[in-house]
Length: 76
Image (cartoon, rainbow, N blue to C red; front, top):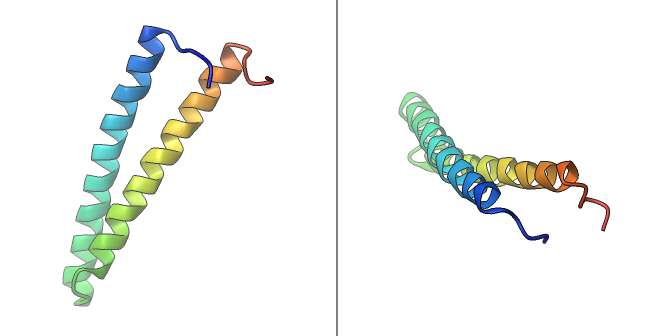
């Protein structure tokens, strides 16, 4: 992975933290609401939280790839 500037690294860390927290929280709330409506225990809550984690990781990887392409380092 190429060296990032301080601001780029800070942006990635901040973006990952915010997106991860919001995605997992929203997934948890949606899964919990569906579990209460469908009476499925905690299964959909778990699926929603894991889906939020996957979404956050995907979003962060897309940001990192964008930064590499923008800096012209994507073709190493």
